[in-house]
Image (cartoon, rainbow, N blue to C red; front, side, top):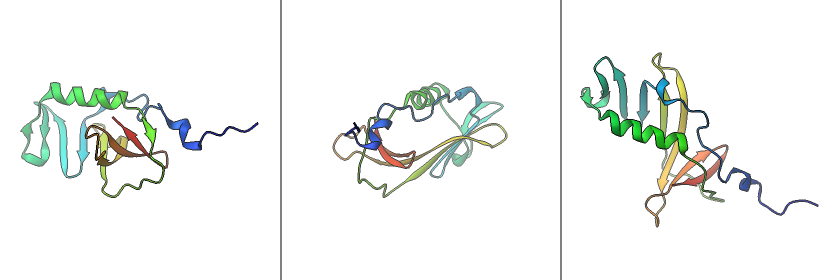
Length: 122
């Protein structure tokens, strides 16, 4: 007997960036914003090396390690996207995520491109 579940349902609950080691991240590029780890700590390179808040940065990176698919958004196309790239000290990409728009009603949900599907995460 075949399953009546849609094929995208297998993504529900799946971790977006499994095994992400935030200790290896030395640069973050996201839609014109560039943060980098330098000798004096993290800075916002795109704002003349303005010091970044390391606690807040770590908190947000930890969120990425726990980010999971809430649901597959069937038929939803990502209209406005921003590429989030996480890089190591040699500027090699560790991971990237295609960010879409926020959910219009929830405000805290965001659409992402993941494994060829548009998914909603919170």
